[in-house]
Length: 266
Image (cartoon, rainbow, N blue to C red; front, side, top):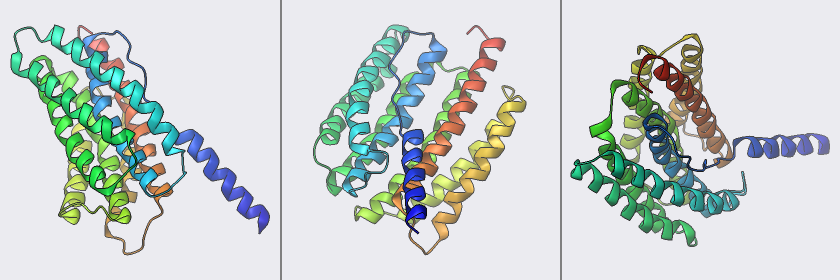
């Protein structure tokens, strides 16, 4: 029995090392790469919120305190860099520039809360802030969006959805329940399925991406089952499943980026 317990502990430790999220430093790049980075900003806002809620739940899985502290610094720098890049590229599109400015204001408010001791009230506020910030980041890129870039953006959306479900569920366990929780989760699940179909029928697909999309579909059944289950799921399992989806979809995005470079000016 002791050996079994030790084996389970080692397994979860390895899972934590493998699945702990990293916020990539910003690199000067093309429109394609910066557009992709902007999408990653949206997704990794949800990863930071997940870490924040895990801290609130007193979970040490994946060392969320360490991850969040490191992520905030890199994310903050990247937020400013992305905003500056698009300000330069957007030219006379003042409304789009304003969207990036407003996103930055929202981020600064959220950053202060992320750096403080977690509370349920702040978790709800950060969630609201980040969903608004995501919309602002999307609005800011619209004048420069092309069909290929829109598909890159859609992969980001698929990265986020399991994270959003996970955050909602973890907040519910913590006692910071979201209004109309069941409707929110149902909408996310429906949205994921529709967008998976759109990605599966686009011209950037190849054999590798189609196999990954099938894998993503299989993995997502966990969240469909979870949403209807009466039993309670442990936070570490949800966190791992959300991160699994992130890695699969991020791989798909990389495939699409390479295909986009072949077929366009990138």
